[in-house]
Length: 636
Image (tube, rainbow, N blue to C red; front, side, top):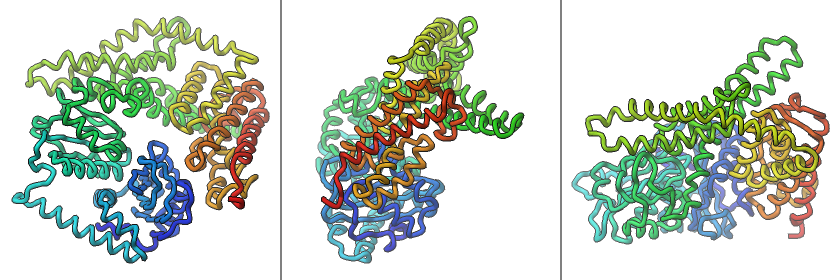
């Protein structure tokens, strides 16, 4: 399939009207929708914003490639927009972006579609190609430029398939050979752009390199045992987990995929100097550091392991919580309803019961890869079923400890068995690792969980005993945390705390958390209605969607506004959410559901009217602050 079958004249905008990142996303999504490429415009936009929340797709060099893979896409397509003046898209190089390619991949996109979408990402690494696109005067000219480039590249690929033609990436150089792996969450754009940037830079440095891409269509250009044996070092530029087990004893430099686009020369120089930890054991490097010790950029260590557990736990929380809320709603409407009982059984007895084991299992697998999941899940199960006296659960405290315990026990077992004869290698994963790691983790958890249960009960009782000013202060803090980074680590920390306290029977904290999470999108939606002259037409349309998202406790509805104007929006949402969380605690409101927003009204402990009044007041506070801080567009 050719790129020009996905990028057509009716998905090209020669001159964007947009003045901000949020405007660009809205304008290009609308263009795809008008061209009939989408099933659900709002759903696809949410997929784009979710990808932007992970890291910016403004790659520098004047280019941005927002992209998403979603069931909201009817037909895989590409939209192109150009801003000759340039605008701030939060690019990696801090410079204005001019060229915007929005990639829309459907959930059922076949490999041919994915390869075509990825090919465009590679072309954009060519400065001549970019310059031609920037100077094109018509849609037809843009299509011609892309078509010519594609014919040229496909011809080169056919030549390289001929064994008589030497591959440029494996050509001999004056220095050691470097290997690399690139991978991004969607496996469409950054994966291939980073690979091309590394290959181009290596060619300029006369350094032989081979780059494996872990893309949406599968692994391409796979590194072989011979490649690894010859390598000086391996660069792993990835925002997702990559199996490092083949690189035992090699220097492995781990960085986010965006660093390969921003500082490829520096990464190659570090690889050549072997300025990276030596990898030992399992799927992790011996030192959880990126770029020779910059832990914060690798997003690894303690934080990464917990976030891996929390993110995989959330579907159980959200799905189970909403089903619990619906079961109570149906129970009130239809007393003695069997359907309501079934909903509650699924949500409470099943989904919620698995929360802690899943949390522990994925924390452990983040530490020790796949062999860590089983002992982590078993440890988490013991945490919620084997306690002290009448208390049978150490809750999230036990789950966290079980996850880290199982992960490091599994790593230790891997290291202890690393010297086994090669003939027994196949038995490690299917026999030795699971049996020994489950045994050791299970025995330790059975010994320590009764004590953990006592600590957990004592902590829960202490928090339950908070009242008056202390409880209000906690509500204020939790509310503000929910609004600071909209789905980021601070938000997740507050949400996880609320779930933990809900599991322990302390309902006030979950009420404050949900109030704080509903305020940001509701507050910005109100602001677009009350201060219309301070928002663009596209932002006002986005505000209508934010009403719905906020009502159902989906904090991400505020992301388009926060991305476009963070210095005004984030403080306003944090203050409004803090007010809502504090008022909820002041009124003594409890909530017996971890999700649902307005659906969970029937689960409010206390006065539901006062609870939703707290949220409304918080939303108005946010709206008024935003209205005061933002400039009137008529005067700009």
